[in-house]
Figure 1 (cartoon, rainbow, N blue to C red):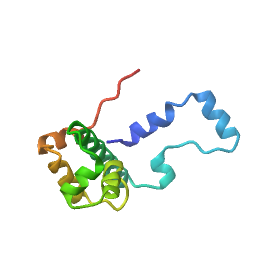
Figure 2: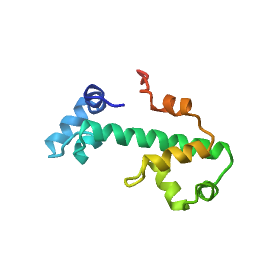
Figure 3: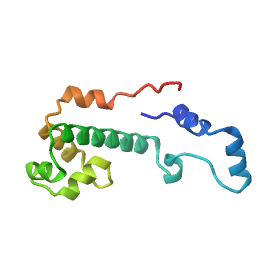
Figure 4: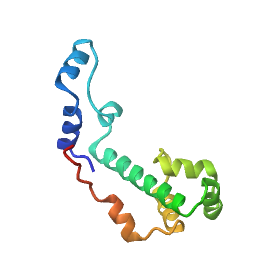
Length: 122
């Protein structure tokens, strides 16, 4: 999950010269959390939903299922599955977890998906 320090790193990852040019041109430089006005807690929730949605998509594809196949198993719609996979607003965590379980994902696998990832210094 992104902390204030990691967000600062993301913004700092842009070349200083490019950032200065943009700011001189009147552009604000920041990240999505700042742009959307998210609190740190809201940002963490969004990151969590996106990570779980990515996991759902990977597991669905490994099973050879289409979004419609998964939707039928969930008694939901294909569009709802698409929203689950992208972490869209309005998608409940209950449905997201249920979809992961239907796709054969264990609670241990879910926990691993939610662990902070170390970024390489590439």
